[in-house]
Length: 186
Image (cartoon, rainbow, N blue to C red):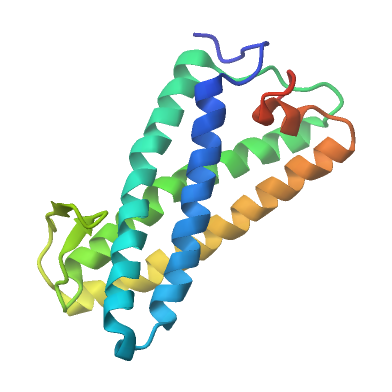
């Protein structure tokens, strides 16, 4: 398919966008809670970790699906009236978002795999997910902070992305309407 589609984002593209956004926000919020829970609330802490990991494991395949749809279907034509440098900045921001959406969950999985405690990952408390790496405290201590920093970067970049969509919407551009399925635009 062409790199541009004049009739807006497909319903699948819009649904995946909002689903991934919700998963990231939910996983991030649970991540903040799970690390703050004291060991005296161990069951809640374990459940929070399992839910955080389960949500995180959903993100990469959904993002890959989004990328496949974007390659197959394209994207709406660039909206006139937005300066070229802003289009380039948006493209760079989207590339960074996609990279973080793939890398942060992978780092989380590797962090869980190498954790000294070797707590099993059980997807939504139903399906055991094997760890590909063995416990390795040094590797865990290297991966975990990168996962955490990446998660913060992802959420902050996503917040900036949302703020720019609202700003463009307030200026009369159809960017936000297009992702909401309420009109053509970028």
